[in-house]
Image 1 (tube, rainbow, N blue to C red):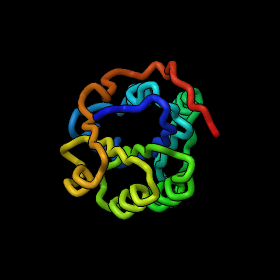
Image 2: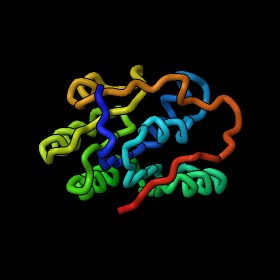
Image 3: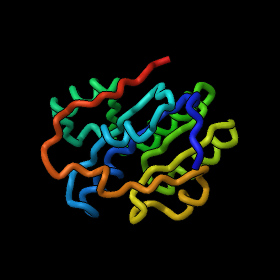
Length: 164
């Protein structure tokens, strides 16, 4: 996959989906800082973490996420609708949308974004990602043990998000 440096990127994390996959496959917590760093030299304009309001988010994680320049959104139920609305409304301002999720419920969103001219990357654990998502995306980035924390995170990252 070739990456253009001058791309505006939005990264949308379906936290419950990815965290459950990481824990079930590798027995650890997701290393979000490593994922954000993996975006490379492309300009991240938004990075949003979606997790239902009834799921606990520690104050330590909130501080860490804020240090990345990210937003946290907590819907009443699952993240699908909120993530979809945000991606659709931001599509005209983005060159690339990274969906950090593997749920095939996002397939209509993926098609819509591609029809709007966005490149769509799906980042997920191969074991938990729907084959339809892998095939429909412009590129599939398989997550593996490099993106798992086995010990307590430091809460520090070098990367900041530039908001437009």
